[in-house]
Amino acid sequence: MPTRQRPADTYSPLYFLTSVGAGGLSVTFFMYLMFWVKHPGRPVPVFEDITAAWATGGTAMHIGIAAAMIGIAVMFFLNLKYLIWNLNQFSQFKQTEAYAKLRSTNAETQLMAMPLAVAMSINGSFIAGLVFVPQLWTIVEYLFPAAMVAFVLTGLWALSMIGRFLGRVLAQGGIFDVTAHNSFAQLLPAFALAMVAVGLAAPAAMSTGATVVAASLILSTFFGTIALIYAVLAAITALNSMLHYGTAKESGPTLMIIIPLMTILGIMWMRQQHGLHTTFDEHVTAAGQFMMLTKLITIQIAFGLLGLVVLRRQGYFSTFITGDKTSAGSYALICPGVALSVLGHFWINKGLVAAGIIAKFGVAYWAFTAIALGFQVAMVVLVFYLNRRHFGRVFPAQVVPAE
Image 1 (tube, rainbow, N blue to C red):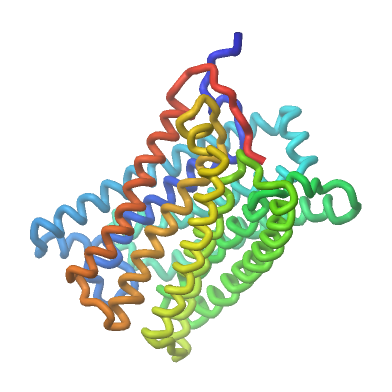
Image 2: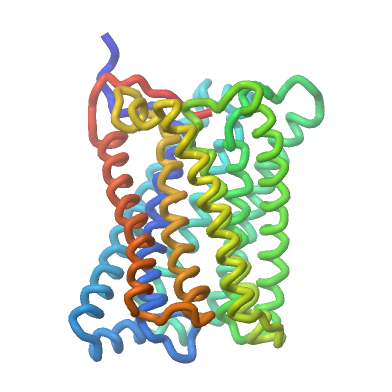
């Protein structure tokens, strides 16, 4: 008889995505404050703006603020909880034969989920600080350099892991298994680098110091460009393998990794453009920003539909979500929904509203916003469902590690 255990007891580095997903959801709740709370003189709302809006706002504003702050607090707590759990589990996993095997196969890139999670937690920490720490904005210029150092160190860590992997597979032939490259799993390194890049771009949008803004622009461009190059090359080679061998069933959710990539790189671009505008007098029109965001949303919808078609044809949901098998890779389903919600808010507010296409807080505004909120709610439900399934239940499940 099989040993009764939790699925999470069979560890995979992809469980770092539990932390990433929760951190991303904290960002979706921050969108309420970002676009519904006035923050004059600042690019983002801070504790003082939130308390002022609470003091002067009506019931609707109170509900929005309360939901945002509770959501941020809960999801940031889960983000840190599962980051710490994963770091502890990974330290034990490194002593096993499974780790040595992982390091010798295509699946070595799963290790990139670790710097991805760390970068997400740094981003989440900054959001939590803005929302819950009074007077933080008075010392924010001192925090930007420290944050950039943290992101650069994380980025260099990620690059060293990528270099080790590429050095192994490119130094001699026959090591990389092309037949196992039939998914977008190899885009995970690009995802990690993009997360570093968007964090490095934050000072460009928020700092008033030209040196800090310039450093932010240079560093975020460096990591963002490498992420984009890596993503394009990995996607092209993966598509070739998928056309030959079909998509690996347990790695099906990776087909939608393009969705969070577009959100992260899109936010990086907007942060950079804001810094170029306020510090270096470079201007982007509202119409131009609207079109850029629309193109990103279109790419997301295209890959979202592609992913759903393949997942349904393969019976992924009935196998790994509601069936008797589990896979740590299922947590990759959270990121696309989170990304659609976040970029949806930006498209509505920085695209449609800014270009004068719809009125803020009008009927059309709330109709579009309801879609973004729908993705958010669905992902919140999915997070708790997967957490209960992987960490809470004890049953003789057949655990399938994602490739």
